[in-house]
Length: 431
Image (cartoon, rainbow, N blue to C red):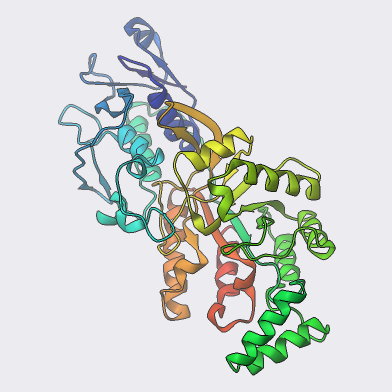
């Protein structure tokens, strides 16, 4: 066990140390403000304060973990060996940066609480982030920093055997629209037909009626392929279905249709199933509760996971609503158009409510790759290269690679050509 001496034990401090020490390095950690207890401890130990007690392993602390409110922080990002760091510590510290304060800044999404420019959907975009502007978005810096801490601890305590964690994958399949032509209802089918005719989309019109008459498989119906891949993988897929009401933003099948319910049940036999929360449920907990109860009635078990429509987060409200409804996993933390590590880590972590200064039971599963984020790379070779670089970054720290694809990504639609192969690369990376 690692014992940490500090002058003040705060919720922020406990939260951050537990992520770095327990979740990443596999070390139990406890805290003390009593010098005599620290001296008596005969295993791993370090002090985290303004001054060292003696010649122990010491990291000079920044004020951030001892504060209780938000403030406009002065952040100076600097190169540090193979990575970047901020909150410099000075000469006496065993690490040149306070990795704990810096990690808390990234994990709590501190910058997303500060004034920033949002896109048309009200989202925090990559270009607003510290990581993007200082070019460390493509690296899980918190995990890299944790391994640097481990190296320093190993040097001080050479006889201690550190646990090893293994690389994992968490494939996520987002299903905003289960079928392109099927189960749409009479009015939507007529509207689609008239649209095809007015735009002279004769090929699509032929495809539409071939599907409706049962001669062809619906282009978005890739679920047999998904289930086959699940059977071959030792890691459970998370499949998230949109079951909210039809609206301007959400256009899935009516969740009362027997065939759609049957589809969800059949997928749930093999994969983990959650909901893609509808656009309007973001600001209305009663709508989210209705969708939660609907899905629980279909899968006959408690709903465990959610991802918000359009990858939109309203911090802290979106996450507070999940906590209140006892939904314990979220898959929204990432960027829609940029690959990388929005929260600086490839290790699932707990949501910390900055307003209430408390760690919550909600586990955030940050994703590093959304299929749409790969579209900006023109060739299949470029897509493969950028995906592989990302996988290698996660593998280097034995983290969890989380990728979000859609059911239609695996269709024969020209835009998504080659995406089955990209998904296979992710699955094969864990073999």
